[in-house]
Image 1 (cartoon, each protein chain N blue to C red):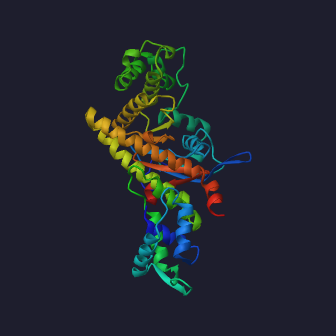
Image 2 (image 1 turned 180 degrees about the vertical axis):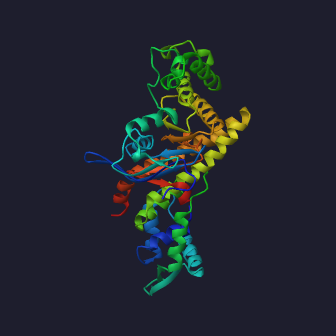
Image 3 (image 1 turned 90 degrees about the horizontal axis):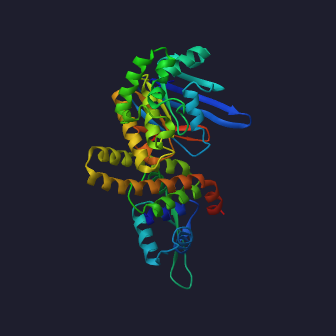
Length: 228
Length: 174
Protein backbone atom coordinates (compact mmCIF):
# COMPACT_ATOMS: atom_id res chain seq x y z
CA UNK A 1 0.00 0.00 0.00
CA UNK A 2 1.39 3.43 -0.88
CA UNK A 3 1.44 6.17 1.78
CA UNK A 4 -1.46 8.58 1.42
CA UNK A 5 -0.77 11.75 -0.52
CA UNK A 6 2.56 10.54 -1.90
CA UNK A 7 3.61 11.80 -5.32
CA UNK A 8 5.96 8.94 -6.08
CA UNK A 9 5.87 5.63 -4.25
CA UNK A 10 7.44 2.20 -4.63
CA UNK A 11 6.35 -1.02 -2.97
CA UNK A 12 8.31 -4.28 -2.73
CA UNK A 13 10.79 -3.52 -5.52
CA UNK A 14 13.03 -6.36 -6.62
CA UNK A 15 15.81 -6.22 -9.17
CA UNK A 16 18.65 -8.59 -9.93
CA UNK A 17 21.57 -8.27 -12.31
CA UNK A 18 22.62 -11.84 -13.05
CA UNK A 19 23.54 -13.42 -9.72
CA UNK A 20 23.59 -10.03 -7.93
CA UNK A 21 20.51 -8.86 -6.06
CA UNK A 22 20.39 -5.06 -6.25
CA UNK A 23 16.93 -4.55 -4.73
CA UNK A 24 15.27 -7.03 -2.41
CA UNK A 25 11.86 -5.69 -1.46
CA UNK A 26 12.74 -1.97 -1.26
CA UNK A 27 10.04 0.58 -0.42
CA UNK A 28 9.98 4.32 -0.99
CA UNK A 29 7.63 7.27 -0.92
CA UNK A 30 7.93 11.02 -1.35
CA UNK A 31 5.35 13.79 -1.05
CA UNK A 32 5.15 16.92 -3.23
CA UNK A 33 7.87 19.40 -2.27
CA UNK A 34 9.55 16.95 0.13
CA UNK A 35 13.29 16.24 0.18
CA UNK A 36 14.15 12.64 1.00
CA UNK A 37 17.76 11.48 1.36
CA UNK A 38 18.56 7.94 0.25
CA UNK A 39 21.59 6.77 2.21
CA UNK A 40 23.54 3.56 2.42
CA UNK A 41 26.97 2.08 1.73
CA UNK A 42 28.36 1.65 -1.79
CA UNK A 43 26.69 -1.25 -3.55
CA UNK A 44 23.67 -1.22 -1.24
CA UNK A 45 21.25 -0.61 -4.11
CA UNK A 46 20.54 3.09 -3.66
CA UNK A 47 21.38 4.09 -7.24
CA UNK A 48 19.35 1.16 -8.60
CA UNK A 49 16.45 2.36 -6.46
CA UNK A 50 16.80 5.86 -7.93
CA UNK A 51 16.99 4.50 -11.49
CA UNK A 52 13.84 2.40 -10.94
CA UNK A 53 11.95 5.34 -9.41
CA UNK A 54 12.95 7.53 -12.36
CA UNK A 55 11.76 4.94 -14.89
CA UNK A 56 15.29 4.47 -16.27
CA UNK A 57 15.49 0.85 -15.10
CA UNK A 58 12.51 -1.53 -14.99
CA UNK A 59 12.31 -3.55 -11.76
CA UNK A 60 11.81 -7.33 -11.97
CA UNK A 61 8.77 -7.03 -9.71
CA UNK A 62 7.03 -4.62 -7.40
CA UNK A 63 5.02 -1.51 -8.01
CA UNK A 64 5.95 2.13 -8.68
CA UNK A 65 3.22 4.74 -8.84
CA UNK A 66 3.72 8.34 -9.92
CA UNK A 67 0.85 10.74 -9.28
CA UNK A 68 -1.53 7.79 -8.99
CA UNK A 69 -0.36 6.16 -12.24
CA UNK A 70 1.29 2.73 -12.26
CA UNK A 71 4.62 3.06 -14.11
CA UNK A 72 4.52 -0.58 -15.31
CA UNK A 73 1.44 0.19 -17.38
CA UNK A 74 3.24 2.98 -19.29
CA UNK A 75 5.05 2.22 -22.54
CA UNK A 76 8.57 3.49 -23.32
CA UNK A 77 7.27 6.63 -25.04
CA UNK A 78 5.09 7.55 -22.06
CA UNK A 79 7.92 6.90 -19.58
CA UNK A 80 10.26 8.95 -21.72
CA UNK A 81 7.76 11.83 -21.81
CA UNK A 82 7.44 11.62 -18.03
CA UNK A 83 11.20 11.86 -17.61
CA UNK A 84 11.38 14.88 -19.95
CA UNK A 85 8.53 16.89 -18.48
CA UNK A 86 7.93 15.81 -14.88
CA UNK A 87 11.37 14.66 -13.73
CA UNK A 88 14.71 16.44 -13.48
CA UNK A 89 18.15 14.87 -13.04
CA UNK A 90 21.44 15.96 -11.47
CA UNK A 91 24.38 13.58 -11.33
CA UNK A 92 27.90 13.73 -10.00
CA UNK A 93 29.81 14.05 -13.31
CA UNK A 94 29.63 14.74 -17.00
CA UNK A 95 26.21 16.13 -17.52
CA UNK A 96 26.82 19.16 -19.68
CA UNK A 97 27.27 18.95 -23.44
CA UNK A 98 30.79 20.35 -24.02
CA UNK A 99 30.03 21.80 -27.46
CA UNK A 100 27.12 23.95 -26.22
CA UNK A 101 27.34 27.17 -24.20
CA UNK A 102 26.05 27.11 -20.62
CA UNK A 103 22.77 28.81 -21.52
CA UNK A 104 22.27 26.41 -24.44
CA UNK A 105 22.89 23.51 -22.03
CA UNK A 106 20.30 24.82 -19.58
CA UNK A 107 17.80 25.46 -22.40
CA UNK A 108 18.34 21.99 -23.92
CA UNK A 109 15.47 20.15 -22.12
CA UNK A 110 13.03 22.87 -23.25
CA UNK A 111 14.33 22.70 -26.82
CA UNK A 112 13.87 18.89 -26.78
CA UNK A 113 10.31 19.48 -25.63
CA UNK A 114 9.70 21.69 -28.68
CA UNK A 115 10.22 25.25 -27.36
CA UNK A 116 11.81 27.77 -29.73
CA UNK A 117 15.34 28.91 -28.99
CA UNK A 118 14.48 32.43 -27.83
CA UNK A 119 11.81 31.42 -25.35
CA UNK A 120 13.86 28.44 -24.09
CA UNK A 121 16.95 30.57 -23.49
CA UNK A 122 14.92 33.27 -21.75
CA UNK A 123 13.56 30.70 -19.27
CA UNK A 124 17.03 29.13 -18.99
CA UNK A 125 18.54 32.47 -18.07
CA UNK A 126 15.98 32.97 -15.28
CA UNK A 127 17.05 29.67 -13.74
CA UNK A 128 20.71 30.55 -14.20
CA UNK A 129 20.10 33.79 -12.28
CA UNK A 130 18.54 31.80 -9.45
CA UNK A 131 21.58 29.54 -9.35
CA UNK A 132 23.84 32.62 -9.61
CA UNK A 133 25.55 31.50 -12.83
CA UNK A 134 23.88 33.84 -15.35
CA UNK A 135 27.22 35.56 -16.02
CA UNK A 136 28.48 32.26 -17.50
CA UNK A 137 25.79 32.09 -20.18
CA UNK A 138 28.17 32.43 -23.17
CA UNK A 139 30.89 30.15 -21.76
CA UNK A 140 31.32 26.50 -22.59
CA UNK A 141 31.46 23.86 -19.79
CA UNK A 142 35.23 23.47 -20.25
CA UNK A 143 35.70 27.14 -19.33
CA UNK A 144 33.91 27.07 -15.94
CA UNK A 145 34.89 25.59 -12.56
CA UNK A 146 33.46 22.34 -11.17
CA UNK A 147 31.17 24.17 -8.73
CA UNK A 148 29.92 26.55 -11.42
CA UNK A 149 29.35 23.66 -13.83
CA UNK A 150 27.32 21.82 -11.22
CA UNK A 151 25.16 24.90 -10.63
CA UNK A 152 24.58 25.12 -14.41
CA UNK A 153 23.57 21.42 -14.31
CA UNK A 154 21.15 22.14 -11.44
CA UNK A 155 19.63 25.03 -13.43
CA UNK A 156 19.18 22.66 -16.37
CA UNK A 157 17.54 20.03 -14.15
CA UNK A 158 14.97 22.57 -12.96
CA UNK A 159 14.31 24.40 -16.23
CA UNK A 160 11.26 22.30 -17.13
CA UNK A 161 9.81 22.91 -13.62
CA UNK A 162 9.85 19.19 -12.78
CA UNK A 163 7.78 17.86 -9.93
CA UNK A 164 10.50 15.43 -8.90
CA UNK A 165 14.23 16.07 -9.04
CA UNK A 166 16.53 13.05 -8.87
CA UNK A 167 19.94 14.02 -7.51
CA UNK A 168 22.58 11.27 -7.38
CA UNK A 169 25.58 12.41 -5.29
CA UNK A 170 25.15 15.98 -6.61
CA UNK A 171 28.13 17.34 -4.67
CA UNK A 172 30.31 14.24 -4.88
CA UNK A 173 32.94 15.93 -7.03
CA UNK A 174 33.03 19.26 -5.18
CA UNK A 175 34.92 20.60 -2.15
CA UNK A 176 33.02 21.44 1.08
CA UNK A 177 32.39 25.10 0.31
CA UNK A 178 31.25 24.56 -3.28
CA UNK A 179 29.20 21.53 -2.27
CA UNK A 180 27.44 23.58 0.37
CA UNK A 181 26.70 26.39 -2.08
CA UNK A 182 25.24 23.93 -4.58
CA UNK A 183 23.06 22.37 -1.87
CA UNK A 184 21.85 25.77 -0.60
CA UNK A 185 20.88 26.90 -4.09
CA UNK A 186 19.52 23.50 -5.17
CA UNK A 187 17.22 23.11 -2.17
CA UNK A 188 16.11 26.78 -2.18
CA UNK A 189 15.25 26.61 -5.89
CA UNK A 190 13.46 23.27 -5.54
CA UNK A 191 11.48 24.41 -2.50
CA UNK A 192 10.37 27.61 -4.19
CA UNK A 193 9.18 25.54 -7.17
CA UNK A 194 7.59 22.92 -4.85
CA UNK A 195 9.68 20.22 -6.52
CA UNK A 196 10.34 17.06 -4.51
CA UNK A 197 13.96 15.87 -4.38
CA UNK A 198 15.15 12.26 -4.21
CA UNK A 199 18.66 12.88 -2.92
CA UNK A 200 21.04 9.92 -3.12
CA UNK A 201 24.10 10.61 -1.01
CA UNK A 202 26.57 8.98 1.33
CA UNK A 203 27.52 12.36 2.84
CA UNK A 204 25.80 13.27 6.10
CA UNK A 205 26.27 17.00 5.53
CA UNK A 206 24.36 16.69 2.25
CA UNK A 207 21.68 14.46 3.78
CA UNK A 208 21.18 17.14 6.45
CA UNK A 209 19.42 19.24 3.79
CA UNK A 210 16.66 16.62 3.58
CA UNK A 211 13.38 16.42 5.50
CA UNK A 212 13.90 12.73 6.26
CA UNK A 213 16.09 9.85 5.19
CA UNK A 214 15.72 6.26 4.15
CA UNK A 215 18.60 3.84 4.53
CA UNK A 216 19.25 1.17 1.89
CA UNK A 217 21.25 -1.87 2.89
CA UNK A 218 21.54 -5.14 0.93
CA UNK A 219 18.74 -4.00 -1.37
CA UNK A 220 16.30 -3.42 1.49
CA UNK A 221 15.17 0.03 2.54
CA UNK A 222 14.39 1.39 5.96
CA UNK A 223 12.33 4.55 6.45
CA UNK A 224 13.88 6.09 9.56
CA UNK A 225 10.92 8.40 10.17
CA UNK A 226 8.71 5.39 10.74
CA UNK A 227 11.30 3.66 12.91
CA UNK A 228 12.34 6.43 15.32
CA UNK B 1 28.81 4.92 29.31
CA UNK B 2 26.25 3.33 31.66
CA UNK B 3 28.14 0.75 33.73
CA UNK B 4 24.86 -0.58 35.15
CA UNK B 5 23.39 -1.32 31.73
CA UNK B 6 26.65 -2.80 30.52
CA UNK B 7 26.86 -5.19 33.48
CA UNK B 8 23.20 -6.09 33.00
CA UNK B 9 23.87 -6.80 29.31
CA UNK B 10 26.77 -9.07 30.25
CA UNK B 11 24.49 -10.99 32.59
CA UNK B 12 22.08 -11.79 29.76
CA UNK B 13 24.30 -14.64 28.60
CA UNK B 14 24.01 -16.30 32.04
CA UNK B 15 24.50 -15.77 35.81
CA UNK B 16 27.96 -14.61 36.94
CA UNK B 17 29.84 -13.71 40.08
CA UNK B 18 30.92 -10.10 40.61
CA UNK B 19 34.50 -11.08 39.86
CA UNK B 20 33.54 -12.68 36.51
CA UNK B 21 31.53 -9.60 35.62
CA UNK B 22 34.48 -7.33 36.25
CA UNK B 23 36.74 -9.56 34.17
CA UNK B 24 34.27 -9.68 31.25
CA UNK B 25 33.77 -5.92 31.43
CA UNK B 26 37.49 -5.16 31.47
CA UNK B 27 38.16 -7.57 28.61
CA UNK B 28 35.45 -6.17 26.34
CA UNK B 29 35.13 -2.51 27.31
CA UNK B 30 37.68 -1.47 29.93
CA UNK B 31 40.89 -1.34 27.92
CA UNK B 32 41.96 2.04 29.27
CA UNK B 33 39.78 2.14 32.37
CA UNK B 34 39.25 -1.18 34.13
CA UNK B 35 36.46 -1.29 36.71
CA UNK B 36 37.24 -1.18 40.43
CA UNK B 37 35.74 -3.98 42.50
CA UNK B 38 33.96 -1.31 44.55
CA UNK B 39 32.20 -0.04 41.39
CA UNK B 40 31.05 -3.55 40.52
CA UNK B 41 29.61 -4.30 43.96
CA UNK B 42 27.97 -0.89 44.43
CA UNK B 43 26.42 -1.17 40.95
CA UNK B 44 25.20 -4.71 41.63
CA UNK B 45 23.61 -3.72 44.92
CA UNK B 46 21.78 -0.87 43.19
CA UNK B 47 20.57 -3.22 40.43
CA UNK B 48 19.50 -5.72 43.10
CA UNK B 49 17.57 -3.03 44.97
CA UNK B 50 15.83 -1.98 41.74
CA UNK B 51 14.83 -5.57 40.91
CA UNK B 52 16.92 -5.72 37.74
CA UNK B 53 19.08 -8.58 39.02
CA UNK B 54 18.59 -11.26 41.66
CA UNK B 55 20.97 -13.41 43.66
CA UNK B 56 21.11 -16.76 41.96
CA UNK B 57 23.30 -18.45 44.57
CA UNK B 58 25.80 -17.81 47.32
CA UNK B 59 29.03 -19.75 47.70
CA UNK B 60 30.71 -19.81 51.02
CA UNK B 61 34.44 -20.35 50.89
CA UNK B 62 37.51 -19.52 52.91
CA UNK B 63 37.04 -15.82 52.26
CA UNK B 64 33.93 -13.68 51.98
CA UNK B 65 30.72 -15.12 50.51
CA UNK B 66 30.54 -15.00 46.72
CA UNK B 67 27.16 -14.01 45.30
CA UNK B 68 26.18 -15.12 41.87
CA UNK B 69 23.89 -12.66 40.08
CA UNK B 70 21.24 -13.35 37.44
CA UNK B 71 19.36 -10.83 35.33
CA UNK B 72 15.58 -10.56 35.89
CA UNK B 73 12.91 -10.00 33.22
CA UNK B 74 12.76 -6.35 34.29
CA UNK B 75 16.53 -6.23 33.78
CA UNK B 76 16.28 -7.58 30.21
CA UNK B 77 13.59 -5.00 29.44
CA UNK B 78 15.82 -2.27 30.86
CA UNK B 79 18.78 -3.33 28.67
CA UNK B 80 16.51 -3.50 25.62
CA UNK B 81 15.21 0.02 26.28
CA UNK B 82 18.74 1.37 26.75
CA UNK B 83 20.02 -0.24 23.54
CA UNK B 84 17.06 0.93 21.49
CA UNK B 85 17.21 4.55 22.65
CA UNK B 86 19.64 6.62 20.57
CA UNK B 87 22.16 8.70 22.47
CA UNK B 88 21.99 12.47 22.43
CA UNK B 89 24.50 13.52 19.75
CA UNK B 90 27.51 15.00 21.53
CA UNK B 91 31.30 14.72 21.27
CA UNK B 92 33.12 11.58 22.38
CA UNK B 93 30.15 9.26 22.21
CA UNK B 94 32.20 6.41 20.80
CA UNK B 95 32.71 4.48 24.02
CA UNK B 96 28.96 4.37 24.72
CA UNK B 97 28.08 3.50 21.15
CA UNK B 98 30.80 0.87 20.97
CA UNK B 99 29.48 -0.68 24.19
CA UNK B 100 25.93 -0.73 22.86
CA UNK B 101 26.99 -2.37 19.60
CA UNK B 102 29.11 -5.03 21.32
CA UNK B 103 26.38 -5.79 23.85
CA UNK B 104 23.80 -6.07 21.05
CA UNK B 105 26.04 -8.60 19.29
CA UNK B 106 26.71 -10.53 22.51
CA UNK B 107 23.00 -10.76 23.26
CA UNK B 108 22.05 -11.58 19.64
CA UNK B 109 20.13 -8.36 19.08
CA UNK B 110 20.17 -6.42 15.81
CA UNK B 111 23.23 -4.15 16.10
CA UNK B 112 22.58 -2.58 12.66
CA UNK B 113 19.27 -1.23 13.96
CA UNK B 114 21.05 0.48 16.85
CA UNK B 115 23.44 2.14 14.41
CA UNK B 116 20.55 3.15 12.10
CA UNK B 117 18.64 4.75 14.98
CA UNK B 118 21.76 6.61 16.07
CA UNK B 119 22.43 7.81 12.52
CA UNK B 120 18.90 9.15 12.39
CA UNK B 121 19.32 10.99 15.70
CA UNK B 122 22.59 12.52 14.51
CA UNK B 123 20.99 13.60 11.22
CA UNK B 124 18.11 15.19 13.11
CA UNK B 125 20.63 17.33 14.99
CA UNK B 126 22.53 18.06 11.76
CA UNK B 127 19.31 19.28 10.10
CA UNK B 128 18.72 21.72 12.96
CA UNK B 129 22.30 23.01 12.70
CA UNK B 130 22.16 23.25 8.89
CA UNK B 131 18.97 25.27 9.12
CA UNK B 132 20.43 27.55 11.81
CA UNK B 133 23.53 28.02 9.72
CA UNK B 134 21.56 29.01 6.61
CA UNK B 135 19.60 31.61 8.52
CA UNK B 136 22.49 32.92 10.63
CA UNK B 137 25.41 35.30 10.18
CA UNK B 138 29.01 34.28 9.61
CA UNK B 139 29.62 33.68 13.34
CA UNK B 140 26.61 31.33 13.49
CA UNK B 141 27.88 29.59 10.39
CA UNK B 142 31.31 28.96 11.86
CA UNK B 143 29.92 27.73 15.18
CA UNK B 144 27.44 25.43 13.46
CA UNK B 145 30.18 24.17 11.12
CA UNK B 146 32.28 23.10 14.09
CA UNK B 147 29.40 21.08 15.52
CA UNK B 148 28.50 19.68 12.10
CA UNK B 149 32.03 18.43 11.47
CA UNK B 150 32.06 16.64 14.84
CA UNK B 151 28.71 15.01 14.16
CA UNK B 152 29.91 14.04 10.70
CA UNK B 153 32.96 12.36 12.23
CA UNK B 154 30.66 10.34 14.51
CA UNK B 155 28.60 9.35 11.51
CA UNK B 156 31.64 8.19 9.58
CA UNK B 157 32.48 6.01 12.54
CA UNK B 158 28.90 4.67 12.56
CA UNK B 159 29.08 3.83 8.85
CA UNK B 160 32.43 2.11 9.20
CA UNK B 161 31.19 0.13 12.21
CA UNK B 162 28.05 -0.86 10.29
CA UNK B 163 30.25 -2.13 7.47
CA UNK B 164 32.34 -4.14 9.95
CA UNK B 165 29.55 -5.66 12.02
CA UNK B 166 30.11 -9.21 10.81
CA UNK B 167 33.81 -9.10 11.66
CA UNK B 168 33.08 -7.49 15.01
CA UNK B 169 30.51 -10.20 15.78
CA UNK B 170 33.11 -12.88 15.03
CA UNK B 171 35.59 -11.14 17.33
CA UNK B 172 33.28 -10.65 20.31
CA UNK B 173 31.34 -13.92 20.19
CA UNK B 174 34.24 -16.28 20.69
